[in-house]
Length: 461
Ligand code: C2O
Ligand code: CU
Image: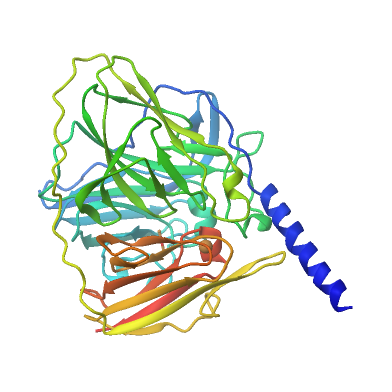
């Protein structure tokens, strides 16, 4: 009896994994296409130099994802990605938002240290009903590449196209020939190029798409001035896909991450960008007129057979024919960041899953929304150990506060999203500064967050 049940368990586990494998579709190969590459800049309606006021509407719109292929998406202002809001550190950002979608929504400002009432989560804001409006208003305290997206049914709403960027510049930005945002996403489309209906079976691994998008288009071309030093601010807005970015044959220089510039540039061959994260890279274009290079996403195993997929093309970079420019040098020092002191509070958060036909996920045994908020005090430095007890990676994101990595590597760079590899533990420190209130933390694989891998921190003033 005992042997039989053990066999049955082993067999189910094995079949489960094969089933999972088949839930990860192959990527559709689309030829490169010219046309718009960059995201659309938002219009600042306020003439005051320190106020950026934007009107934003969420609505259904037809988007041409590849030449001749039009898909009905949910968008901010009809574009994919939504507008790029640009501000300087210390500016007031005011967003007059209208919801013209068929269902309630909110806007969460991922990585921006806003007051809790402006964070766009259900703990602090009733979702904005169809036809209703809401004005988000906050000061942007940090330079960096941030993004915004709904925090209601995020697995469905973000997948359908609701995301945009907020670029905040500070005094010490390095001189580069270009400075552009590249939002990465993948979409699961059916034969008619419509967004496929959500499927409970995809929940375990997270919904991985079959069409890779860079700035809302499949296989676009980024024109660059030859010989120039080009800055790319990458954002991973995908529900679940991990992008391991590389420009084969070239080294990449990382100059920033989630929370702005890092202390010193670092050369790498490739960089892993998990859902929610940002990375700032510079690359030097060669002097060869017309040279075309392919940015790729290399294989990465985040569990359940994901590592078996081959490298995929993300976009092309093409030298234009103009005269080469003199290449600015990358400064050897970019930012000064003091390490956070020893913590007053230590916590352990255990990420777990329970499988089956409709999987659920938990943190410390609790499945959102049936959770007990963690009690904390404003001003404290805390150290969190995120323990991943599952067989796949989870990208962990904390709202409201930025953190520094302690283990596996000590790193002062400011982050708000970190990959916790399968079976491993990641430790970070954070200072609960400026804003009390209720803050969320969760896995940024949106299917996991929406199925319970989410919690709250109550910070008392
Ligand atoms: Cu980008 Cu709570 O998320
Ligand atoms: Cu997860």
